[in-house]
Length: 115
Image (cartoon, rainbow, N blue to C red; front, side):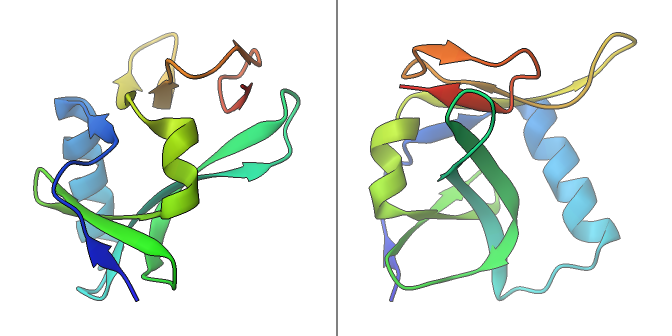
């Protein structure tokens, strides 16, 4: 089962919070779902970010970030500690971006990294 932890290893900017709440409301995401943040193997730099609404799973820690329920597998924290998630809505870029101080290198698209 999940453990509720006080201090989340990641932060969300105001823009990311606004967009995530908008998406949650538009897609009518139920109360038993939260935002899953994590990593998985793959991508051009070695690891991909996971960001999407999901249900709680065994091994998850649970956080509350600006009114958003967040799930993260406890093993993923070491790759993501200190990371900031932002949402860009400009002419040159639109979408979520990940500012991860643990990444030794990132790919051009910004969705994968290596440590």
